[in-house]
Image (cartoon, rainbow, N blue to C red; front, side):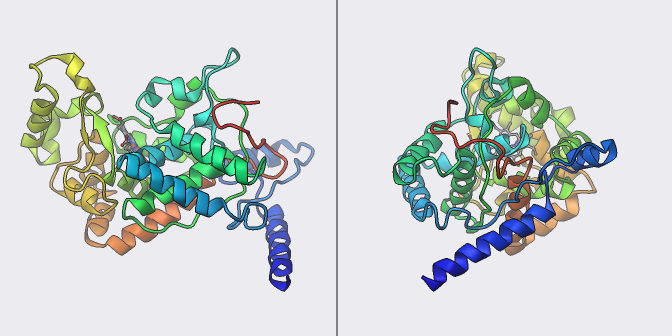
Amino acid sequence: MARIRFQQTLIVLLSLAAFFRVGDAGCPIASLGRRSLKQAPVPAQPALIFGFYDLTCPTLNSIIDTRMRFWVLQDIRTPGKVLRLFFHDCFAAGCEASILLNSTAEFAAEKDAPISVTLDKFQVIEDIKSEVETACPGIVSCADILALAAAKAVELAGGPILVTETGRRDGVVSYLAGATASMPLSTQKIPDLEAMFVQAGLDINDLVILSGAHTIGEVHCSNFADRFDPAANSPFGDVSFGQELLAFCTRNGAGDIATLNLKTFMDLQTPNSFDISYYVNLIIGRGVMTSDQVLFNDLRTQPMVREFAANRTLFFESFQASMLKMGRLHVLTGTNGVIRKQCGVYP
Ligand code: HEM
């Protein structure tokens, strides 16, 4: 009883602290705009906290754990797909589960954007949501379920056990154009990638750290076709790698564009293990996408790549910190947003 009272007091104190700390978490532009326009003050909303559902949905973490383990047993590629969903959610309009919404008569949704075409495992999040709704109806947002599932994905792939803040609420709209404008491209180089990260509210360090997520998962040939050209490849140090990729992607007949639907692993050494081999591959010129390989090629980011390739603990700690930062991007909290009943539809 005393423990519960202590927890309740702690939550109130944390919420008050958050109230005075931040309005739009991770959105300096929004708060600048408010100050300079001298509008009537917008009520500040609480920041995310650890353990937001400890009292209201105590079984949440065990449901996430059980269901994620179930899905990974069905398909070992689940962690990569779920982690990528979280990234796409946070980058396009913030971590408010808009990536999970289906298109409606009013809007074409983020998930129908060309950049989203290979996103997968929406059903894993919907499945967890339905279990959570049975246990704690109307309490837990899809945005938080996605954040917690992404953290569990990293852990189940052998990565760090990530702590995750919660208290997000769900958005009610989702725009295809928003996804197109917000997501970085696999053909981009450091200046453009950095610009996309800064636009989202992150920085060039987060770019190097979070790209480490490509230590797991798959990639379609269409996303690295620009690596086939030896001339384009030569600055990256391993000319033969582009030719290997080309041979793989055209194995059903040279020049057969349809075969660009083929896919390979992001990290050809340990595709399902969350480890440092992604960075080791970059050093030897075997990063699959241009957006990966340039992290080593650019002298600004190369030192970090070298450090992570040599120090797993440093990579894991950095990944934890950057995931927390990404998880705060333009979140809806307090009285903003809703708790959707299903993640794919609203209402
Ligand atoms: C730096 C900018 C990034 C670019 C340009 C990028 C682009 C891509 C592309 C093109 C794919 C392959 C999609 C396919 O062919 O099916 C992919 C896969 C993936 N991305 Fe990224 N990504 C970036 C950053 C991130 C971040 C920050 C995360 C998470 C923290 C992430 C997690 C993943 C994962 C786990 C996969 C594998 C998905 C699967 O197995 O289906 N990516 N990314």
